[in-house]
Length: 250
Image: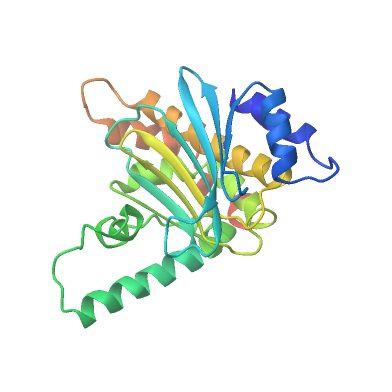
């Protein structure tokens, strides 16, 4: 369903008056569930996907680190609990790390404040992934997770390639961007002043790559909670970009 939805957005590019009105028209033509506030400040599109429902929402930001409006995409994939992963724009990561450090040192706190969103708490809890195998990824993004083997396997491949492409297009302006896998679901959140078919199509392509990477990881994990780290690590090493000098030179 994600592939057909991306094609659907692609057909709307260049349509006269592209914007919320065009998005609503195309959503209704496609038979998707569409809801919009009367003042046009927010819309929600729900898309059936492999027995689940992908939710795409645009409207006022729900995070203090995103100014103005944001795009949110969410899909429940029933992922294993071990898949707790986070990728975000490096500028945002550095800013949140500094804010968190200053807050805790000024208030002399020694316990993480659970009122903070997960993405801020994770910065203090989980190890970072070494992205030195790709210069663009290393310069533009930060990735972390509860397990570094899983984090590397998630980012190394189609998802990493999409993130590199986004750095030259969708995220060229270095706007706040967050991609998370947690509690079985996958989330995308990014600052987006105006929702246009082009930007929504690019967001879906990036989200789709994250979905496929997460599902591939899930398929590599043995049932019953066995030694999944060894299985994933061995599989990843067979296709690692570390063995590809061309990729590391980007």
